[in-house]
Image 1 (spheres, helix red, strand yellow):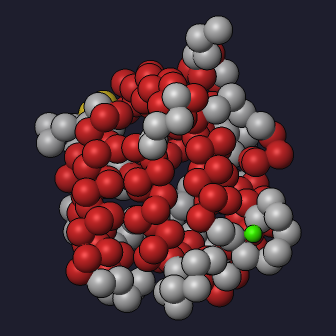
Image 2 (cartoon, rainbow, N blue to C red):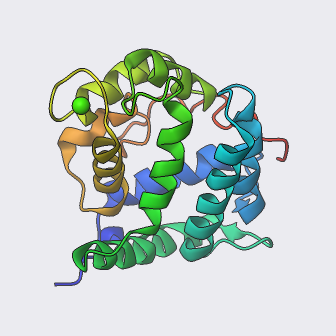
Image 3 (cartoon, rainbow, N blue to C red):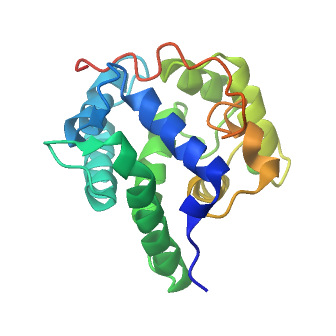
Length: 204
Ligand SMILES: [Ca+2]
């Protein structure tokens, strides 16, 4: 059966909350550049190498181009349907045991967050990450609590991939609501908007 995530108002609120966090200028339009330049913004704060940033940019370009973003931009009202369509394609790729586009992006993310290169994300590494993207430090604890499914106290690559995939691309599972400390849950009323998510972006 074809899943249409846009039939769930909570999922739509979640998608729009994400769009709004990127659209800092509140213009109702986000361009492909917004996403790609994000990689430049985090380079210094995450002490990422040029190669890591290059991989991140490639992954961002692939994912958000497939979602439907262009250099001219996408309108806010179009985003939920576009994200839903992308989610359908991703679930299909996953079902066929193909690499999802999202996997490439998660791998790039993981490499950058995993500063000491031990192939797992500690609470301290997660704290650096969440504050880099403008969230309060306690969002890291929430993330770890939910994404650490084997309960070993760290997040491995498969756990990051799974949590993010479920959160954005599958019908809502309420047990994941607090993944980002409640931000992006889609519940009403929304928590105070993230003040400076993607604050390092030079555009906007
Ligand atoms: Ca784990």
